[in-house]
Image (cartoon, rainbow, N blue to C red):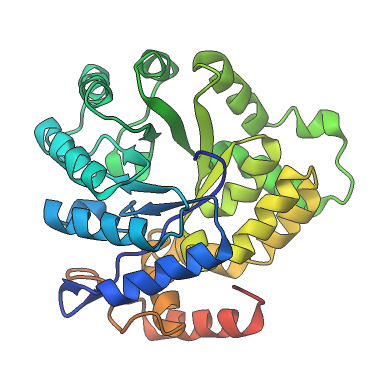
Length: 315
């Protein structure tokens, strides 16, 4: 479940309602690419914006069309009560794991976040992927909190930000021959090693932040939870294969070829709007494919993305 590429498709909308036909097409593309897992209704899939019934419907559709590939679903909500109800709904839909972030409006403290995971861990019947995303949750996990959460039942993975791997990313893209001793001494490698000491061995560690995915996988992360993998799964799988084969330079070179997309992610507040536009360009869904108040990327960005998709061998 928690290995290789976990692809995060968008949940496309049409006239303020979920476009289930378009979502089915996205899932079938991921299934045909044979990704390692699919995260329906992750952050890219707009889990905070969906009703419980919509979460069930999207999760069920993903499970039904994943061709046996494991499916994970986001269950975060402001109240623990609603998280537990979301867990119940997506489990009824047949998912293999749940993705849980400490969603809040009032910023939570460590005791509150630990209490959230404790409550869910004792009620869930599938593994939990702990989701750290300070950019959207305004919460950063301490090592002590990871240690406490790691002792709970049903914790299967943690999803960490990719920023510690930024230096490795730059080094690998600028050198054709990096001594193993230098590669293993990077900030990302140290962060990964410290986490391995903190959490039990059965808990997988995944990297997020697509521009850091190649470096994270090369340093030894178990999985890459990828936004762009939800629309171009084969492209990301080639990077994962190179990284897991020990060819960090090749993995980073392939990632560097996507630098135009990484720059677009940075300019547009993350990958959501960009991959939604990509799905529109490729004909999976209509424009606009995101619900209000989201707006499409501007015309210049859209044209640049069309050029990138035409120029690069993305699939």
